[in-house]
Amino acid sequence: MSSNALRVAVAEDEPYNRKRLVRLLEEAGCEVVAAFEDGSSVQAWLAEQPEVDALFLDIRMPGASGLEVAEGSTSALPIVFVTAFSDHAVEAFDLEAADYLLKPVRAERLVRCLDRIRAMKAHGQAPILTPATSKKIMRYAAKAGEGVVFVDLSRTTHFEVEAEVVYAYAGERFETQWKTLVEVEQHFANAGLLRIHRHLLVRPEAIVGLKPTFGGRVIVTLPGGIELLASRGATLILKGRLGLS
Image 1 (spheres, rainbow, N blue to C red):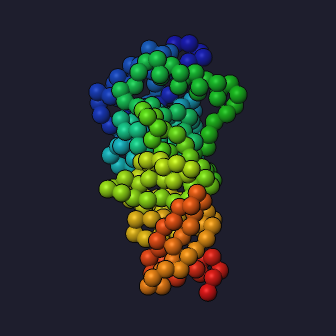
Image 2: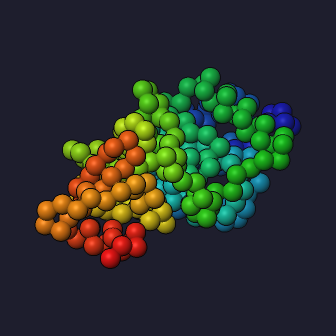
Image 3: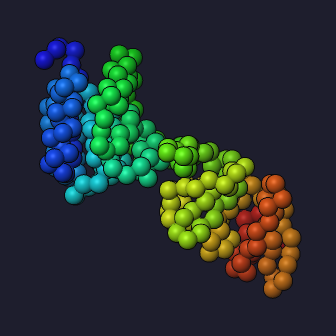
């Protein structure tokens, strides 16, 4: 093993996938110093501040999930999420993951990931994965063909749920990974988003006007001439938020 080999650890609950990833890493010149089957074991291992260059972490595992492991870590250890599900990309982005690999991991894609980790190591760069860091990032993932794009919340006027799919409006309509507006509210817990109807979530700063309508409700006007009807209960909260009587 080369003295310049990356020392890495693997956390994967499925034996076949774990053995395959270990083999690919070793074939790429890495030294695999530890392998885990569940999130709780990884948490205990991280608490010992191990001297390794990266952790390849499955997202869906028994015990603590990979996301929970990363959120609770105070280590500067670069984390590469490995998952069969692309809908976790936004969480990985928020946690400043070093990379995000989809199963089955391809050897050539893994090589690019390892090159990135080596470059980070050479420049003394390593993301610290903490909840405090993730709260500063006000972006979300939206589908774009086979991949995703990241959209700034500051560009977004509102979110709408239809048939268990949440769409975001930011100059155009984007399909997000979320299925309910509750998930959006939880993700942007400190952003002040306002539910104006059971299927509509608005960013108050984007509102350009209100127009009274029947039953004490208001129509919310957004950039581009978009008009949304607020529920009666939401109308009172909305007026209060905007400083109206």
